[in-house]
Image (cartoon, rainbow, N blue to C red; front, side):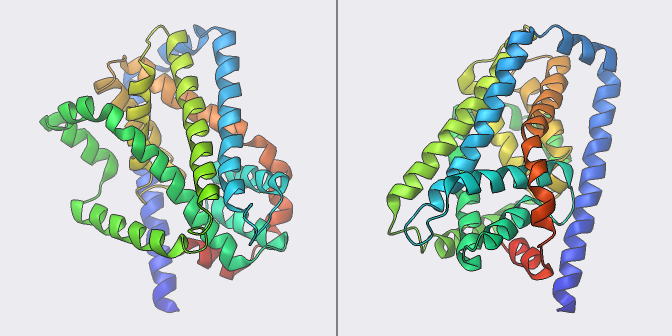
Length: 313
């Protein structure tokens, strides 16, 4: 028990240090560009582009809920879609506004148990939900593979990426083996329900299309456009970087990685890179605000063992 507690504290410390380091780097990038220029870039975006982009982000959040709902709709579980969507927004709100060990997955698991769903099945569904989201993004990475590789083979590219990730190749391989093991274990319940898996993957596709289109609209508004296919490939790579356990909820890491990759690989200006990174995070946080109505009641029933169970996922 003590060893497990020490390991959890070490992970939490690493994530706080990683968050502070990347946030400091982000502040440095903003200081280089200047806040006035960032605000000017935001002001030049037509209100229509900004409004539609926010609508697309909101739809993408609903699609994320639909992905989990598809997994929990199988006869063995039979969860109501409305309840699952509600829990999803609660989890998104917790992830964005409660950057602690009580994260979004803990809130979702606690809420599922409070609805009377089996705890083990609910925990497994969260693993599968994560993996399907990861699979969807991984399928889009090849779209940006060529320009990404061209940047990474340069010394500057590797140096910039190392500064963001702060992990070794061995750590990545270990993470990959861990994911494969979890994949085999978690999919045991859904292997006899392939339709649920396909529907869940389809909802991931909707989420991705809405998110990439929103980013494209914002870049068009800043008069620094990028092809949708390239946005898909580059954002998917950014997403994979934010999965590395070096920051709390990807704070700082997502923004720095997005700025560097979209600037150096996508060819947009540093001003546009910083602005789009800031806007994406802000719009995602705003879209998660409906979850604020559901989080307090769920957190009131969170138990310590539920936190531990989810941290093992």
